Length: 260
Image (cartoon, rainbow, N blue to C red; front, side):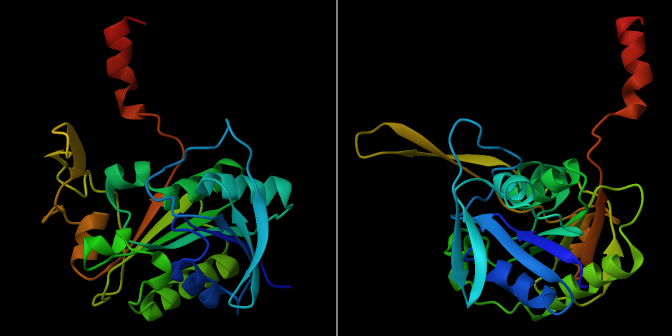
């Protein structure tokens, strides 16, 4: 029997990236799509606890899928606990836009879904594709027309290796970022500190009242060995991630501070 995959994302169930991942996996796995009904980028690991969640069975490209009226994490929880899917692997993506650095993975709905899966004991891989124009992240992901050929090959390759060799030890999920053009293979990386130089743009509405856009350019440089550096130089970044955020190196200094 083929391994079972729960496939989700944060761009929404109609996203071209999600269905590229489906195409990549369907020959090697039994894939069930459970994804948000609408765009849910940058919601991180938030969960809908104050409103009901609907999961509607739909058909896209002739394939049965579940459209979830909630967050990426909701989709994972609904898939596992309401629909009874017990996946061998949870795959999140292919996200339209990179998810690199401490900064980005803390807010990413793509990585958030993978973290949620790992939290419930299911191995997970998140896939993201670098975009040439950051504005592409804000267009309808159904109409994203860049090629997914290299991304699909990477999804099939990495997931195939997991199915064959088992999920690696000492990590809870794998975060994969694919350059818009792969020129230098795969690099195992660590997270960079930041992806964006955060800024705020102030504007005035027609009544003269101020409002704000959070914005900022991408970082031009990052240290060797980081995910940001790898993707900037045409390499596929593969980063092991753990759920445990404990700062073990800080324990002694904290003990001294609190005199314990």
